[in-house]
Length: 115
Image (cartoon, rainbow, N blue to C red; front, side, top):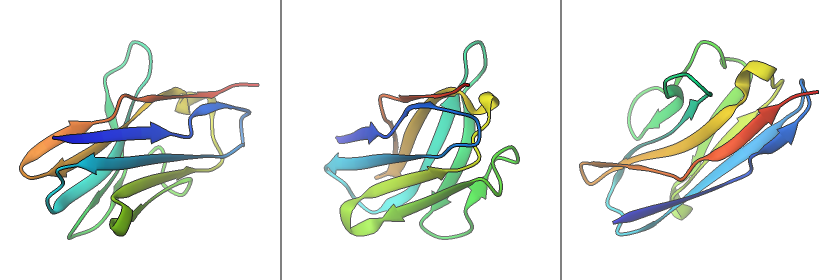
């Protein structure tokens, strides 16, 4: 089993920044991909950014140029740096890890962008 613990969410003004972190622990095999999804009220969960072990990183069009995903392989941790935040970025953000042929989700962290 793999446990994911997220941190870094909160309330920020439009134009502000936040950095989300997600640390994976437990029985971790080679991590195939790490990423972030989000779900706004009344909407479906959507991909924000995905970093595979091999290949290119993918970003949602709505966050390109503003968000940056990175990972620390030694610590099995993935980060999401969010800049120039907009009210429409308000959502619960979920960490996602693909390892050992299974997909794991974090508990979610609330990001609210409001003046």
